[in-house]
Image (cartoon, rainbow, N blue to C red; front, side):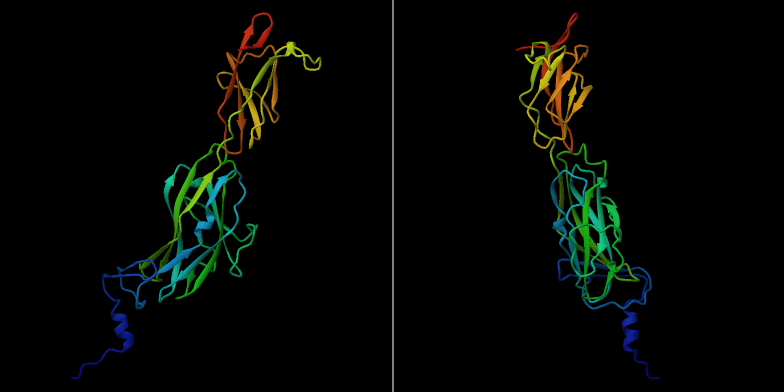
Length: 300
């Protein structure tokens, strides 16, 4: 009997049928695909390596963050440089930094014309964090062979997370993982590293002056207790007057404060500047309490 010659379609199918097939192919665009088919599949294996590229991620870097507003939207471009269609997921790998990635929100949305707007839209975005990134938005989670996909992205510090993070930073590397539908064959395209750095706290108060109020010449400001003045600090939103143990005695947005004679701050008063990201170091002035006349400044 004359053997039956397999058809081209059957020959291609037989190349991917089996209990376990492993192919390691070198990528040509900076990504190497490890193709693993652990079960029988009818998906034909395309010639060449799976590969994808991710660009534009460096635009998500931000320095001296001092606001909970979104940064400028960034255009991320994903190129499917494979000979087959791919399904995409976004991966973020933290490399260094003390800033908690759960504090940083990441939003993604679809670009309608290949560009990104100046501001984050109020609808149509998907949100996650740098610890758990969101799913890629509809229309960008897969691409045909050779296709280019554009995603808009923006980050911000989540509300109520900014204060207390002064000077902290975080560096991570975003990647797009491309999967061949119906298989466990994947490829990874890494983008440029992203670094987010929080602005430092304000500088410490300078030229702190303490004066007994009963020594002031002006009758409008004379009286018991002490008067404190200092220089305005750049970037400060306000100031706290504290006791020597750190107890807050009063707060002000100006550069002066009065403590009554009955106050008991201990051996010194401390002035602390407050900024959006944290507290400055305290500046102190020595004081004492007289049993009869109350609180007074200690003169050098």
